[in-house]
Image 1: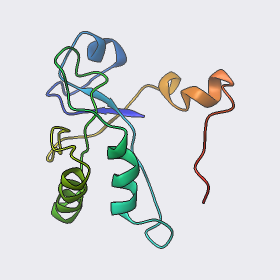
Image 2: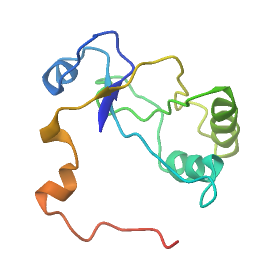
Image 3: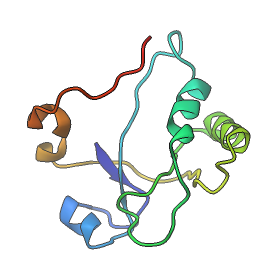
Length: 117
C-alpha cells in the first residue's frame, strides 16, 4: 500500500485525506511466467470506473512502470471501453505508513473472493 500521483514530497494518510493530490494505491508484483501484465490489466480495468470528481484518494487509475506497460494498459482500456480510467506515468511511489500496510490481514477480514489460478 502506498500513495502516488500527487506533488506532496512526504504524503501521509492524513495529507491524502486532505486532498494533497495523491491517491491510495496498491503496487502489484507479479511473475510474468505465471500471469501477463495484460491479464492483470484485464482484471484491474474490468471493475474500474472513470473519476467522477471528488477525492483523488480512492480514484481508479493505472500507473504503468514503462512505455510497454502503458501501451498494454491503454489497449486493454480501449477493449473494455474504459478509456476514461487514467493511465498515468512519471509519478513517484511513497510507501504508506506501517499501520496502513496489510490492512485486511491485520483486521482479520476473511472470506474475500479469490480468483482460481
